[in-house]
Image (cartoon, rainbow, N blue to C red; front, side):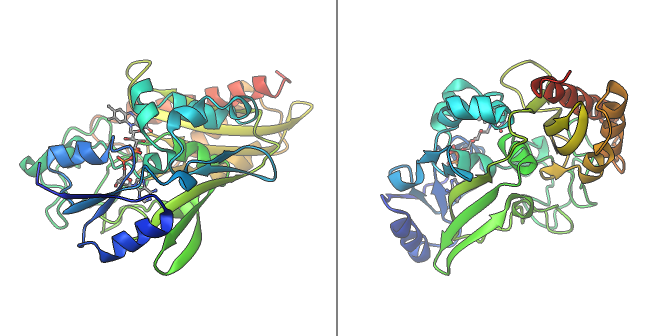
Length: 333
Ligand SMILES: Cc1cc2nc3c(=O)[nH]c(=O)nc-3n(C[C@H](O)[C@H](O)[C@H](O)COP(=O)(O)OP(=O)(O)OC[C@H]3O[C@@H](n4cnc5c(N)ncnc54)[C@H](O)[C@@H]3O)c2cc1C
């Protein structure tokens, strides 16, 4: 690992000031479960890190009132086990407890989780492979390579790496907002605008500026929370990233869909909202057939590579199964 400078701050304002004075490429350090990993692999080599784990103001969790609020440094494990979240917004809790391992969830923050980078083997493989995300303009080894886990939606000729996180998928279904602070002040970014499709610049992954600190994630309170689920399908039942996942939330009246939210994970270059599939469900009874139809609509436009075609059908079924789980939670099955 390349040597790097380390400093620690205890307030958000100090962290931003420290970043403004730091050399280019400096990173904030939260749980370190992704950042240190990538530094050890030589994929990232920041000249300095600013440890924010002592910034207590960023750890608060509020689950009552018109919006849920999660400080960026709230541990994944704590949010996943929050009794109100488990009952009122099961999709949010499940997206966290189905992620990583208990040890990682104890260390990792919900803010850091949003900003994790792709698990594409060519990106993480270091200099051995061309990767436009790691080294702009070098090419993409994944496009004609081992593409079983690569993106089916949102890929470009420059990159087909999947966005790997689970939490951001559930947040997308609930129209969350991410608050930040930087030397230019505070701003709020809708979760759907946080992650970018790769286009011709896959190395630019989010709408955040390099010096911007994520302070909080807000989720508007929603009547769809209780009838929600995060359904994650993977090669093994724990400690694995999604082959396909769906965050789904429903509002039903007598079995008829009055509102629906669907977001896809593990299949796209960024968290993927399936708005047309949501619309197709409106004012229809939710049945196995209508759920499968919504799954098919969610994957219209999906493009498979040589080894990833099976994940289109898997993704459709995952959406359908998630809808049926949510229907059961709505108590009208
Ligand atoms: C073996 C393994 C399995 C995993 N499996 C899963 C899985 O199944 N699902 C899943 O979702 N995740 C999974 N993960 C990823 C894991 O959840 C992330 O590593 C973790 O959430 C990152 O949080 P952190 O606090 O450790 O972030 P860090 O590693 O500290 O930071 C990650 C990035 O975010 C930036 N950052 C952190 N906090 C802020 C902030 N407040 N403002 C601005 N920038 C910030 C850092 O600079 C860095 O670039 C896995 C990780 C490992 C190692």
